[in-house]
Image (cartoon, rainbow, N blue to C red):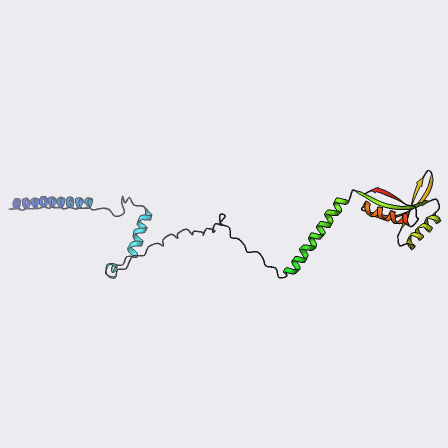
Length: 206
């Protein structure tokens, strides 16, 4: 009777050990087959953070309302500077001539300018680079020169007295002028000669 009890107890232990080993083996196989969280994840921390942002902003009713998930703002298009209009060099626009407010005054001014230009051209043509004087005498004394000058003044001609040393002595010359044109000096000399006053024409470099 006692041997039968020991045999039953031993058999129960063996069966319990076998069942325990089977259960432990099954648990071990189950654990090895399950994926370990966050282990061997090839994605970077930025990718995981992006997934978290998408899950946080995810709207489960978006398919029903037609709402679109928020997206980042599109980059602004580069601002295009307007090009300056090209000037038309081939077809320049002719400007209308300005209308004068005083046409008669402009005409008179133009005629005056033309006359001045003509006179200047004539003077340049007749000017030979010399000044001309009409000498009405050369005297040894200042008193005689003053008397001759007074005589010419009474006749309407203004004369000047100039001093010059000649042959070691001072000579006082009485002259009228200067004249830019030789013809003017020649006419005055002729008038003095007609009046009985001896005269001569003197040319001086300008």
